[in-house]
Length: 103
Ligand SMILES: [Zn+2]
Ligand SMILES: [Zn+2]
Image (cartoon, rainbow, N blue to C red; front, top):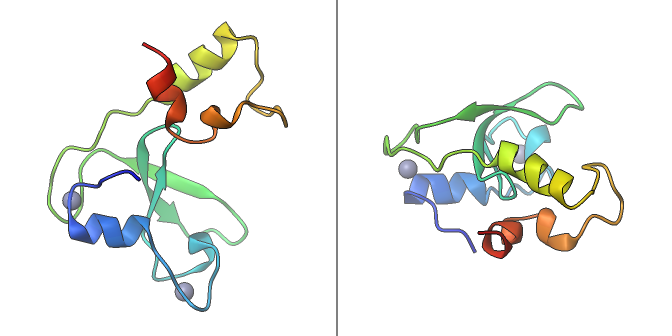
């Protein structure tokens, strides 16, 4: 499990709400963490959408957040001849495990 910078961030990333399974449907949820990109995003409450705005600093403790690995993720897929939309994308590319596999 990924450790976050502070308790407030931990609570937000592991957001749980009885009324909404998806944090994107919940007006009280603020932050989404995308493990495969190591990205923290501010949830955009756009009905039916899954959009977030990337943030570089924690809004609660002010700590600098990890650098986004999004470009590396796409580079790594390309290097292996994989497509991002592939149904049989190796499972390590769905979370942060791919980061440990590559140098
Ligand atoms: Zn924090
Ligand atoms: Zn809710």
